Length: 137
Length: 116
Image (cartoon, rainbow over all chains, first blue to last red; front, side, top):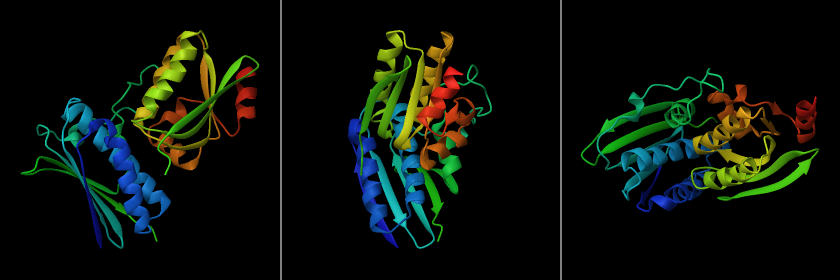
């Protein structure tokens, strides 16, 4: 088991920093490209939601912990924005045609679709989104 | 690891083709939005997005191309996608965007489809 952690404070570069952090950590642990890609996407969606909605564009801390185990990768993304559970948002209508499609709202749907398990927790630190992705052998 | 986006533009039979390389994510989607916006403002309503070298797209990217599609559709236009790679392809499928955009195997097939 290996644990990698990063603190993101610069919202403008957070997405790039997060992508690089995950790329380095996961490739070091030999995680498959498919699993890495899924985690990259889920992490970005979570971070963007925190920056845009949680911190409303203002600077804010995002703590990312990536635990690589033999069978799965666990990604925890935590922030200090006001308590809010993104999993409580309704799923966008993915059957809707172009005229009815709303712009946005897809981030949480992608996280749910890509990850094997997603949980939200209110902690002393703040909001925490915990995502599990099984490593296919 | 690539963390950038390159968009090369060309035209065939009056149709604008964007050859996209890299990632369309929260950091690069405004660049994509800018390129599409420039052409749409100049009156272009028919696009082929060549995704052969697109390695990654997130909801930020989807949002930008959906927004562009809504604008061109108002003028009777179309945005077709070509050579979508597996990773981004999965994202299109998961979000139902594969039903909103015509997706072709190659740029040539997309051209045929549009000009048919």
